[in-house]
Length: 256
Image (tube, rainbow, N blue to C red; front, side, top):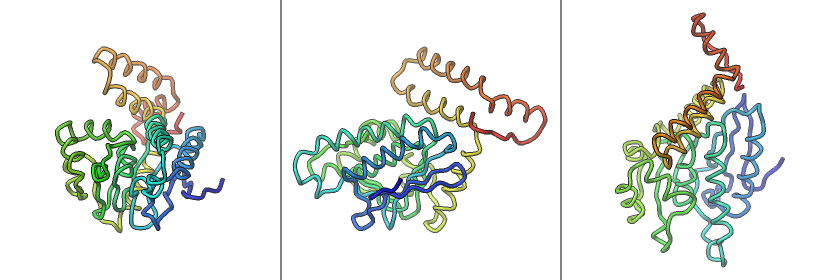
């Protein structure tokens, strides 16, 4: 399928979705959100895809919502669709890596935070700029940010809208790793390929349990964890992992 605002590429069990509006720093508009949701839905149903990477074309990851679109009238529909996009990423039963090459601001910041892992170049910058236009974070910002950095730091970043450079982002827990800009693609694909060779069902169970742990009490979280563990024991990958350990060899996971 061809797209207007994104590019989709598949490599060895990894799908790379590139936000492709570099002339406006990959700002999100209705079409891009629609196409991202469609592409992620396709990834969800394709058993040959085991990892998803999100990246931006040009010098930015994503500049947030398209301001011209926001000035054109009622945007409640796109706000709701963007929220669903964040949920799509979290509900995807496969690891999602954000590869942040430059600015990730506003909804673009929260798009990255919605992903499971965030790799950033040393040129990356992050900001919850919403206050600058008299607006509050959307696309899950008020959920993801405090869970990553704590409520006090989240309020600081939201109230001030200040820019956070890559090193500070790593220090406070916004990103997993910072690498030189020229190494970002190599590092991203190395991690993606490693995960693509891993136990996909186990990743999915862990991802779901971690997300639900934020709003479950301990007893319920343990029940959720148990369900995931039991489901993993029924997979071919679990049997392969046990056998490989006993036979002192590297396991060959198939994602089932």
